[in-house]
Length: 373
Image (tube, rainbow, N blue to C red; front, side, top):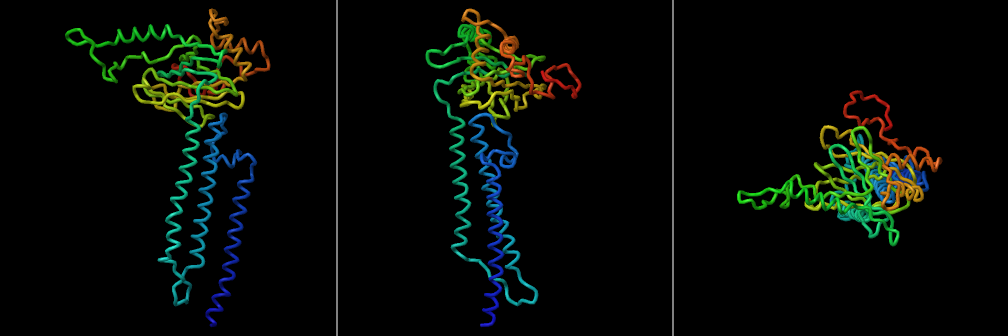
């Protein structure tokens, strides 16, 4: 009887300690979650940058809640570990083993089922976010053609606007001519002079007839970083293709990367993705995130997000004269826009402003140049 009474009296402090540990853990988690109302601050991003698109916000929220769930599980595991070490170790002078939990069927079922429940929940929310990020809706406000090549980028506008205001800027005539020229120049023939299929889905490796061309384009060079101008608050569709090897389209503020493949259709690649909207004006650096050759590290670009009014004027300045526009190149259009709207500031700079410290000049040999081109 005395032994039982002693055990009961000893269990009371243990119970109080466990309750205090549980309360401290709960308060710590609550403080972490309440440290920012929008769940978007330096602490709760857990190392991720601040995104500028709805898709980026969804992915960052998934990351945040996954980290919080992992921390909660970590606290539980750490608590159980310390509890076991503290209260279930053999004490000096005690001839009996501490109480064992082996063959406790309910407990074993619980810790066997718990990982499956956790995985199922994470899988569900991952699929939900993934479906949202990869969803492509009809009739986007702007369709952008992105062509990667060693070692730069070409940006063009396929369509701008929706409904009766939709403007088709694709250069269909040039595309048809180049497709025909490409087929004729790379067509292999056998000894009898008949066409012989190429090695890639019947096409030759030099067949670039799948590439798109547009009447408003910006082409990067070895001395100029290309700028892709898009509107804020609008759905933008981006269509990717490579003219040679595999590249990768990466804007860190979009929080994801997309491979840029040669001949996407032949390679069974979904090369189209959409941004539901960019939530603020700004200039955002872009990179090639796939090792693609000698000057891969210099293959940079910039996304310039303008409000819809500024973007509409930019397109008017860039449209060909036979379509009622001014026919200006990218730098001239941005310069003119800055003159018309002085409040535009660096957003209307004709050169990239976010690519420091990378210099696109292939002949430059010093790594310390402070360039903002």
